[in-house]
Amino acid sequence: MEYKYIIYEAKDHIATITLNKPEKLNAFQWLGRGEDAAEVWSAFQRAADDDDVKVIIVKGSGRAFTVGHDLTKVGFLYGMGTGKPGERRPSQRIRLKYDKMGMDDNMMNVFLNPKITISQLHGWCIGGGVYFPLLTDLAVAAEDAQLGLTEQRLGFSGSGVLGITHLIYHVGMKRALELLLTGKIITGKEAAEIGLVNKAVPADKLDEETMKLAKAMTLLPRDGIAIGKATRHLIYDRIGLISDFIPAYISHTLFTNLRWEDDEYNFFKERRDRQSAKEAFKERDKRYEGLI
Image (cartoon, rainbow, N blue to C red; front, side, top):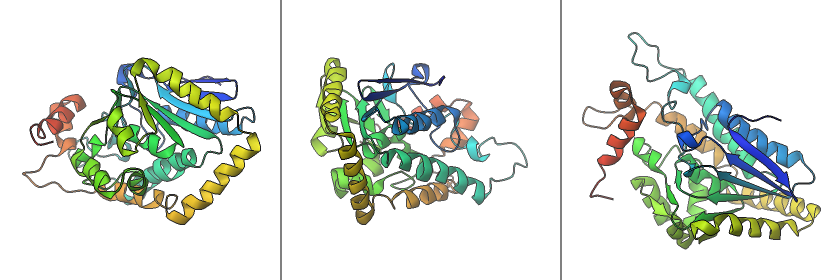
């Protein structure tokens, strides 16, 4: 199978999925039917269907794991944000459709993948990038990796994100709320200290340490891995981690209906007026200087 936006390799019972849009810091259209993200979901399914694969590693090329959603595309998926006179507001059914497709369908399939999954994090790991250590079984980060739910500064305010329950289980309620409400950036070392990832290692050792962990997992029998994953799915269902995908997509759709008052920062308006998503999110984060 040919891929345009990822690199897929399978060897010695380990499948490696490399996000490969380095010129965009691996920003993907994670919601809906973005053709770049579709390749990622397809690769996870390909590895799930390959009986020789026991472990899946997801990593990024270039300077980042992923900076999350492509902010040049966010909102346009629903038909919003162009600023054209007489533009019709996107329907609720379209918003719900795409949000469910991205969070409930695609990301839940990663969480429920029958193979052992590992996130390998380096550089920027922002917004949707933080979803992966929440979705995968294990996660290894470079000590100097930069992790943060900065998309919360668009106005989510602790909503509209995959896995709030997952995040609370990983790091505790107070730390989860701090990450959500501030959109602050933490290092890979700090992420390990609070339990967001399993461990942090020097950047030049990241490939080696992740591969060592993956090889250790391949020593487990295929049936053992499958039974172990299925058993944990039952447990995850009982403690609410699977049902967490439902409020995630509904909450995200509610956010797309947000009304900003005149004295509040509206990224979508700024992006439209500035003609630059990059400048708009720089202005978004500039407001937090000296506060967070």
